[in-house]
Image 1 (cartoon, rainbow, N blue to C red):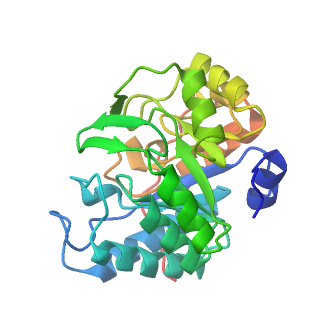
Image 2: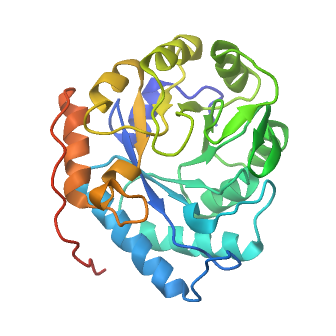
Length: 288
């Protein structure tokens, strides 16, 4: 397990130097207030989303329990871990892309356990270091426990960590440069993620440039708010992008992934220039 994850490793993982990572927002899982009672429905939707992302040309996928709000600040219910493990295993039989796990709001150890047992490649951790005030209360960094758990599991799963994560405020007021450096040097993150204030809002180009300078050779990802109009500009100061909302039908987060919107987004990243927002096509049910 290499102690430093750099741009060479990024290319080896995603087969490109500037990966586009799409997100599968799972429908509510067991014990969620909005749980619909059918795991098959959740699995079917996840499979459709993963295939739509893959067919649109993304380089990786993150699976997260997005619709389980309200979230816990601690460990999720075992049923959620079981369901996510099953779903990730199913998706791996359908797509050949690198897959990551994000267990909201900050259950990094469960994410690492799922990823290790399913042979996923990476996890996203919202609060690896520091203390953030959130709608779940105070969330403390988990680097100490997580890095030792990864060692105990003999796992090579990579840790992609948010810096000053969205939907949260730092308990103290560290500047961005210090926060990035602490996350990498003291939290041992393999890559960092920079987002805007909330889901669907982008980080500023200035903040990305600051983060990139502070990260040195550690990859920097855009974590939210990228779309056809801004992604070419934002990618000038980033190594990769994580996206979901703009890929959904009509750009609405409650809608399914639209493969046409995915392909247009990927095209904008590859070309490095903005393109017009595409018209969504009617949804087509995808079967395994």
